Amino acid sequence: MSTATETLTSNILNHDDSQVPIQTRSERPTSFEPTDFPNPTGQEVNYKHSPVNRLQPLLNVDAVQSDAVTHTVTPASFVVASSGHDAAVRGEFFRPEDRMSALAWQKAENALHVRIPANEEVAEPITIAINGETAETAAFAHIVIEAMPNAHATVILDHKGAATYAQNVEIIARDGSDLRVISVQRWAEETVHASAHQARVDKDATLTHIVASLSGGVVRVNPSVELDGTGSEGKLFGVSFADPGEHLESQVYMFHKGAHTTGDVLYKSALQGATARTVWIGDVLIGPDAVGTDSYEANRNLVLTTGARADSIPNLEIKTGDIQGAGHASATGRFDDEQLFYLQARGISEDEARRLVVVGFLGEIVQKIGVESLEEELFAAIQVELNDGLSA
Image 1 (cartoon, rainbow, N blue to C red):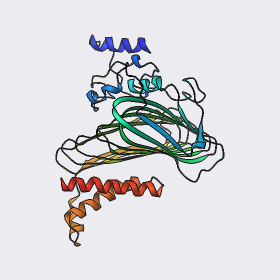
Image 2: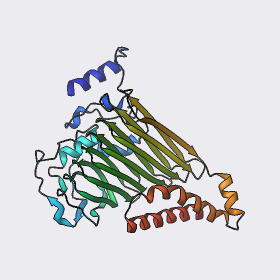
Image 3: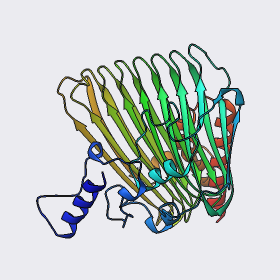
Image 4: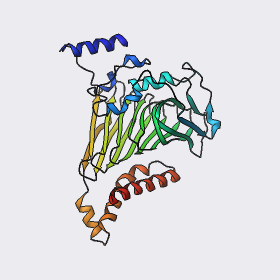
């Protein structure tokens, strides 16, 4: 890995036209060693839309693990011991793809492992409350979420407070399981959070993965899902609301590896304020053995004010011709004037009409969460964001 990285770097510096930087997501190198990944400059394909200068505290190989971020699981009965980097399940599937993820692997000596037993259907959500006390010191974590065969459960990662935090989330949905993982980011404005979610979905299993980023200085949550088993299904949804000074990013990767797999990706964001920024990069790979695949990805962005910026880049790679269907779409725009006119013509004020349009736009994702109390919290948080923007 180190040699390959050095060769690539040398070829680039010497302008060797026979070698070019890796662009395809499936060909990115992986390593558990942070120094195998050069400190990014912002020119790399997976960093070119990221604020590398603001991420530096999580790129520092000399950073010291702190206890500034706590993790509390409710109910605690689903936690199993995971001591050391060689603990069972940890690393069964996960492979760091960048420097921050490799640092999180290395510096988090013990993993937080949540396991749902085989054939068990858990009615109430399992919550992992992740609270930051300060952004002045860096914290690192590796979390394992494992659904055993035919298990059914919802796991919520609820991030709050102030933190400088690099996190790995390793998700395994074993045969026949139905797992829902919801990652909610409601950080303080000084927070820098980089998270790599990697999931494997086995035979006839379903994973629903939802990212909801509503606040934080820099929030970079990158989900990667491998539909490994025949008949497996992946549903990846995301919602974000960026205010001035906030950078909210998701680089999404879905790999259809097994036959007759189904993928559905939909991310939506709203932005207000001249320095608000969202980034969505969606990569779908349909592998040579993924016959009968049905896959679609889309990203929609609603820009509420002048100066806000949404980057949206969908990519689709197909290595077999025997599929049910595949496609992608991306759209970024302002308010639909016809929608506003329709509402105002019925006696609704302009401000309230704008609120209704935004809530309706983002609500499609929020309603997919499937946990009523959390949905209500997120709708309330979106209303607060809108009120703050209208009063500014």
